Structures are given as structure tokens and as C-alpha cells.
Length: 327
Image 1 (tube, one colour):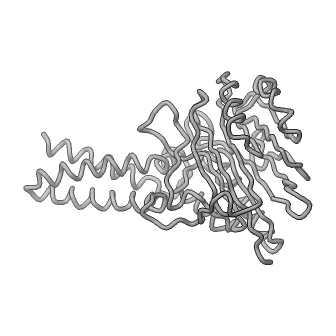
Image 2 (spheres, helix red, strand yellow; image 1 turned 180 degrees about the horizontal axis):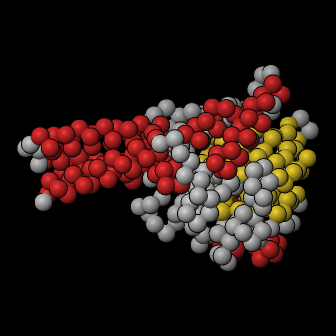
Image 3 (cartoon, one colour; image 1 turned 45 degrees about the horizontal axis):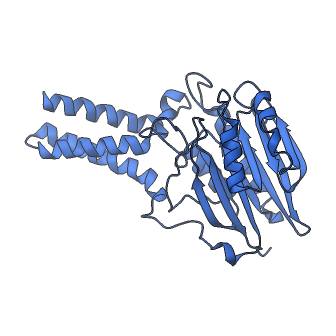
């Protein structure tokens, strides 16, 4: 009975491990890119039981299969642990004169605890606040912070894809674009930090592959790679660039990796941790869906997951230090 149980669990976990390898963008395959940490932990536990009972050819084969699957899952997530080198160096606040702070928050449209988000804003005083899933109710509820943020872009929607950007810096050439799907907007602009510094920003929230939304990952992947190519095409202009939002994709997915490779941007989580922002209600089922990526003009002062505002996402706070990069 024990051997049968181990056989079934091993084969099931192995199947979940290899499903993302299939050349399909259907959610049934792609969704298993998300819980690699959880699957890896279950595989490790399964391996311990298999080794402790190892006394036959079947269990020996199961141990080999489980070991390979565990190592494969570890290969994806290891770069985001403190065991690996940081891609972005850490600097102290006093080491730079120019910093920018960004607070990215998927509020959950049906959540009406706007006061909790306002409390986080008052505590951390971000230069830029990006809110996702904000509808007209949220637009009105966040009106008290307007004096602090004179520059704003608003796109309230009741379809879970509304977006608002609040900035202390002037937003130049701000555009609200449906890059791939109708009524799934993104915001693109320059932030004028001072007379000599403008930062190119892309605020994104593509739809995820799931049984309740897009059955395939194609639209999400196309949006992310389209933005990556746009950034890559402007590389010769040597523009400081920031991308943030709920990308509905995990840090270690092939699409995110392709985004970083194409755009040339950096991920401050590499070598620091997962910074899981979803789901607030299930501690053992969390993964990093909210992201901040930036060009090599920046170093990291602080990256922090903030406490819950009663959404299904935790807010993500980032403080970046700007250094002039030679042309």
C-alpha cells in the first residue's frame, strides 16, 4: 500500500513537473510554472519517504525519478534564493542623491479597504503609486491622496483591469494603451525627475492564463514580449527604464526570463528572495506575481513586501537609486 501511494504521488508530481515543457500555451500546462516551490517541496518530502523505504527495484526507480524532478524544480527557483549572486547591487540611502520609490498594489476590485492602502501610502510616501483592479469606487476612495500626487493617469474599469498611476513627478507623454486585448490597459510615460533626468516607465497588468479568464497564455506572453522588444529597440537612447505591475506571471517562468533577456532589464529579486505577493490568504500557496524590473542605471536601496490591505495581493514597495550610465 505504501509503495502504491509513493508510486502514485511520484508520477503525479512528475507529471506536474513536465506539463510546462509541452509546446502549449493552454492554462492546463502553463499554470504549473507558478507553484514550482510547492511542487519542489512535495517532491523532496516524497523523496525522503522513498529513500527511507528503499528495498526494491520499483522504489529505486521512483527515487531516481523523484530526484530528477526535484533538481529540475530547484534549477528554476534557485536563482531567486540567497544562495545565488545578486543581479542588482545594494546601496545605502546616503550613497546617492537621486532615488525613486514605487509602490505597486493590486487592490482587488471587490475589496473596499481603501483606508488601508492610504495608510501604506502615508507611511512609505512613495514617489509613484500604481494601483491595479481599480474601478470608479476606488478612484473616488483614493481622492484623499490627490494633493500628494498632482500627476495622475486614470483608467477605471469594472472588469478587474482598471489602472491608476499617481505620481509626485510630472508624467510626460503619458499613454493608456490596450496593447493586445481590448479593455486590458497599460500605462506608458516618462517621469520627469529633474531637468536632466527622465525615466521611461511601463505599468502593466496582462490577463493570466486560467480557467476563469484567458484559457491560453498567448495574450499575456505577447504583451510582455512586445514591451520587452520596445525597450530593446530604444536601447541606443540609453534611457533609464522601469517596468512594474501585476504581470500575472512568476519570476522564474520562461516568459519572464525571455522578457528580461530581450529588454535587457534587471530583476532585483535575483539572489534576494521570492517576495511572494499572491495569495494573501493562503501562506502555503504563494508566488511572486507583482514585479519591478529596471535598467542598469539603477541600484537597489530597498525591496519590501508590505502588509495586507485586505486584497488577495500584498503591496510591493521598491526604492531604487539612480546612477548616470555612460552612453
